Image (tube, rainbow, N blue to C red):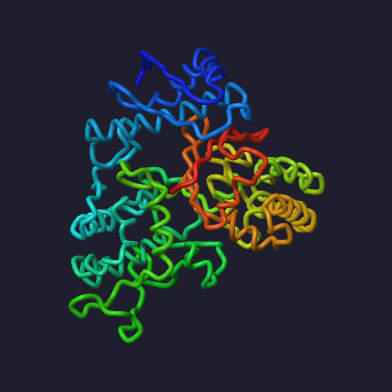
Length: 419
């Protein structure tokens, strides 16, 4: 969409005068950025509700939030009126690569099985592009898909999904990059409580050179699918798939796993992040500041998850340039200082939530910091869609806004919690 024309704008409610001024100055430029990748269309009317207090934001921030809300309504209206093509958001930029490989799901077992067969047949270099249809495997009727695929294909699918979803965040490999089929992970083994929130182990061992090893099923230990076939082993995957299904746009045909963050809750801690980094850096060894910040923020989110060094949100908030490899710096001498700064930030955050001031750092990380999210860093501001957790009912008690923030070395980030 190269031009945005608004015939008539009606503003109601508190702050209408302020919003009218923003509409005349900052909103046009914000709309151009927000709608720049949307296909041309004409809409008679859209209604946008801003659930915020205008007095808490400056004019530029208000314009960004307003434009983002308009974008959501425009995309929704476009999907209802024009029927977006399968495999993508209406009018959104088409990612590089043959996206026609990934059919848009209608929800039937046949569609899920077709998407699974397509994905398994594709090169490992594009395995980070997972068909949205496969997220439907979290549904209870998943056994029907196992019967359609057959035991061998089903085992390959579950194993490849487990390895792909549990791999540390990484940049998409360039086309033609040779892949040896090995799977590496620096993640710690999950506990049973972590399984429920999507922390996944990585299967290891020799097998088909192009695929992760096929798991061995114990029929006596597994429930049976209709017809007596072994039920698919989705232990630890269902919660992860279900959460990603909530985060992915309903019009999207696939999810790019290089945009998935496991530390979306860092956005809740943004008022402390800059100070934590600055204070910890005072005692850190010499090195590139952005690499040291990445290590500090990863340790703040989860000191036991080394894979977070390549997490897209950690990299963005640390100011790591695209393509830069973050190696683990020798921080051992200053780890006590880093951990002390991190725990003070976690305690300060918990102290703002009624009844949780004495929570342990691990509890705060489990309940609010470690959560899945999808990060779109190609827009201005960057967009973070974060999963919701049960104790998020307390977040309205926070005395600062979370919808949009910026660190001194990072781009602005807009945050939306889903569902």
